[in-house]
Amino acid sequence: MKISNEELETLLQNKVAEERKITVEIIQLLEEVSRRRIYLERGYGSLIEYCIKKLGYSESAAYRRIAAMRVAKEIPQVTEAISDGRLNLANVAQAHTFFRKEEKQRKEKGTEIYSVPEKMEILQNLERKTTREAEKVLLELSPNTLPDEKVRLLDAKHTQVNLVLDEELMTKLQEIRDLISHKNPHPSYAELITIMAELSLEKLRSKRMASLKTQSNTGAGVAAQEALTSDVAAREDLACNIVQQKNPASRVAVRENLASDLASQESSASGVSTRENLSSKVGSQKKIACCIANQLGTAPKSETMAEAKRSRYIPAAVRRRVWLRSLGQCCYRDPLSGQKCSSKFQLQIEHRHPWAKGGDHRIENLEILCSAHNHLRAVQQFGERNWASLEN
Ligand SMILES: [Zn+2]
Image 1 (cartoon, rainbow, N blue to C red):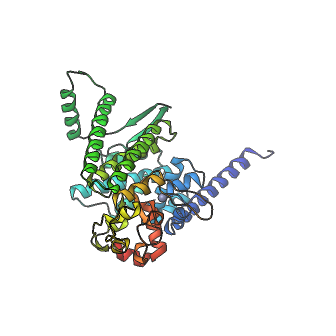
Image 2: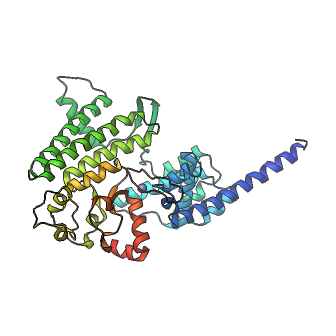
Image 3: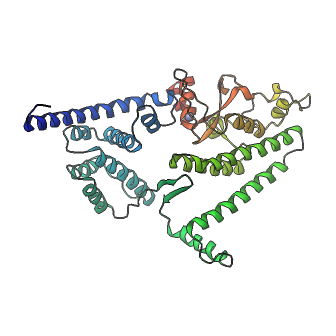
């Protein structure tokens, strides 16, 4: 490159300024993609997943852009500060995390949350600061801000988890330590979690089996038990696969989903929540066991699908069969690219042909969707305004 040092530096500075302007344009385009829910239509469970898998950003780069997008939505002036180089994305993202935590803590305490002018002042204090300097500014504002949980894959079999435990949980852990001290006087935290996980799983599984035994000894009951056995096995396989997954965050999600799924199946006969179940306004539920018996051909003649067809209740055994078919994952697929969501977050059962439009509980009319795609499907089927009025 045959140019002088001065020319080289000018060229570089111009390109950096250009890059900042493009970054702001990207943030504004992301906002529009988010508003139109295009990432959901394309088969991604979240905007950050879309940014990583579709746009090719690293997790941190995607997070910084989405954080800036959210701050800019509330405080549009932030884009100008990014564009002219006063604020960098890392500091805006730090501020976003800080505002979110502060708002949560202040709401819990019942104290006033930051106003927009206060947030603008904080952002101004982060201008032209390094990441560490910005961190100090925010820590001075709220020394009690707790660090985020961090999950890092160490090797194929080990994951490092950094988390903050409150006093109440520490007391409970100490009590567990005392109770097992005759067997293991000085357990590590990993050993403690292992013991707690084994005890919890044993208890949750036996409770679940016990609840099934109370079901009538019909073909439906037997089928449900069989389905449950393989269901548990399938999810145990999923759990075993946790350590083989490359992404630590997804391993945590699998664990959380496994635990919450077991817990939710304990607390309700349904096992998987449905949009109808979640919305109290959609109507009362009426339990009609002959629906599944019809599916299995064991229903008495008087108990026909015709009688059961308008009950909102989806029998537990049907739910389990739908769950097994979907492998416990969101089944949404982008019709254009074929991209499948596969999220395991807040799974719900959805009627392909909507219940409100006469769809029934036949297994082929049911599918598992994550909450984001369930919402997208509802908006597509009923329109944003109608869906919002159902929700509210
Ligand atoms: Zn999904």
